[in-house]
View 1 (cartoon, rainbow, N blue to C red):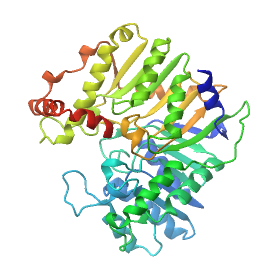
View 2 (cartoon, helix red, strand yellow):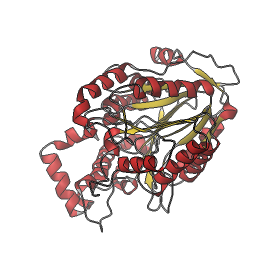
View 3 (tube, rainbow, N blue to C red):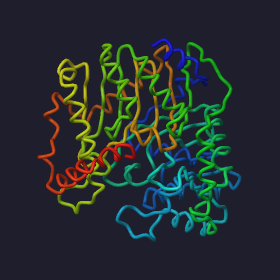
View 4 (cartoon, rainbow, N blue to C red):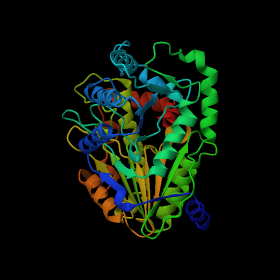
Length: 446
């Protein structure tokens, strides 16, 4: 316990004015704030997300970027997305309809270009993607786990619920921009997807391996600032791969130091082994643990029974099975309210929240799904907030209330459906997966 507290308290930090730390509460607010910031940008715009989609919301964001660039050609604009995700269509869509085609089309229409860089974290998408987050505009960081498309930005009648935080902090913004410039854009494996001369993946395989090796050693660089009693501390963290991953280590340390309470959000209930172990230890030492997870129907892979079923639609059921097993093993802790599990469901919307609160003192803002894939394969980052004087408690409590608004408390594992309750096509798939023990493999890459 002492070692964990020591390791967190001795992380380098940046001082953050609590008055310049905002929490947004909806996808619509996030979209409005992002567009406003783009329009008002005076020196730089760096957007990093898993994808910038070829749909109405994606085209709106790209249009805003191009308009800003035409108004001010000296504006430093760079967009980073996953290399593989940008060059394939949506599941079931025609192969020619890719996001990269949209980037090229926009580039052809304007005098002053906006590069959209593809970052290949691994040679194949299934083995690792760019899951880094952060929209840096001038000296402000808008941090969310959301990507840029209709559902994440609530463009039409559906939304995918995420967390959204706005920090105005020049040193933090500079550190995150420098990481993007030095560790990603400067590497030969990273190429502009809007350029017609971009290479094929097989041509840059060696460079991709070198990039991943470099990223595994990389970190955000900044000069340490000790916060005053009127400030909070912020530490940007980054990690990829299982070995020597500072982000993973910090998450485990954060859970290990909890004395009173842990509050966790995750969209896919599939904790890495070390996280599951820390949660079990926390419950054993009397810490109250609250877990908020999306109902299977609020999972972004869920396919309604009246629609044609695809294999990918089995994932929400696999996650629910994990949750049911966990709840059954912890039935006594659920009954005593030492463990609270909340299922989020709001109409036909979906759930994508991630993050950890510990003792109302430490808050992790992240795009990390807290699953084995995040732990071992994807490039992830986070902002660790240390709030020793409760400057942000009210804002975070409001955020928690907003999150819990559309949740149902699980009072017993029997509330969760079992295999026999699932549609027949799902039952067949689950039995097949279990029979060949493929579920063990799937849990490591999903």
